[in-house]
Length: 253
Ligand SMILES: Nc1ncnc2c1ncn2[C@@H]1O[C@H](COP(=O)(O)OP(=O)(O)OP(=O)(O)O)[C@@H](O)[C@H]1O
Image 1 (cartoon, rainbow, N blue to C red):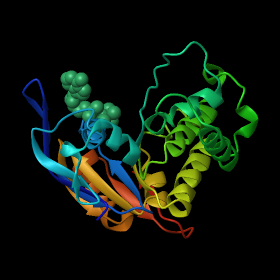
Image 2: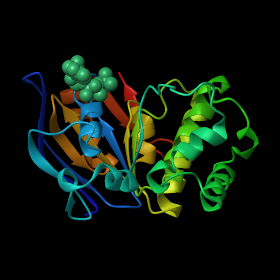
Image 3: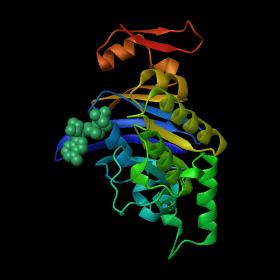
Image 4: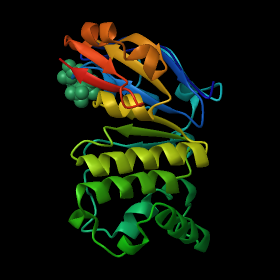
């Protein structure tokens, strides 16, 4: 497996949040991380890219322990799109934001190749027109695209996305999920995305890890994981999986 999460435990001030998380992912797959509020999803992502250090367990990328990698090396493997992006620069342009993704590869100042890579990414994500726009003047959908572009420019093999579709209307949700799926296939990226919408997860993820109280409840294909009984167990709601229109649709009763 390209990413292995083995027995991860983590506590904030002695309060356990991750209690032995296990799952794995291959490049070219979209893995949905699902679970109720407070179940530890964001904490899990932060352990993968070592923003947080687990107290037990090991995370391996291509068999190498993340705990033993240099931070600069991790940045070449992992691109992280957090939920709330703090803006430290005074009104950066979209081009500048995407160029930030090149940081792990730049020793002193960007070279022409870095600029070429940024232009290519902007083009392939259909946001070249936004290059000179100010980042903080974008719509939520455009912001999400630009942040994904920044992670792609980083040339990481794994993308960690914390609720990439939150605050997006249904059209943009579908657009962003299509983009994520296409990127995973075309660029052989492994994508771990925290997703709250069960329908989006059902239709766009290759695998799902369903967690609750920092523990893995189920791991497998969407069909295996998003069953009525598991949805009931984790979210405490009654659900039906409707397949009338070909694609599965989760109906909460
Ligand atoms: N910096 C922190 N210090 C202390 N406790 C924290 C911190 N960050 C998160 N927690 C706690 O850890 C638990 C898990 O939080 P986390 O953000 O990982 O959950 P989540 O599943 O991503 O939640 P949500 O779906 O609401 O975003 C929660 O009880 C939260 O209050």
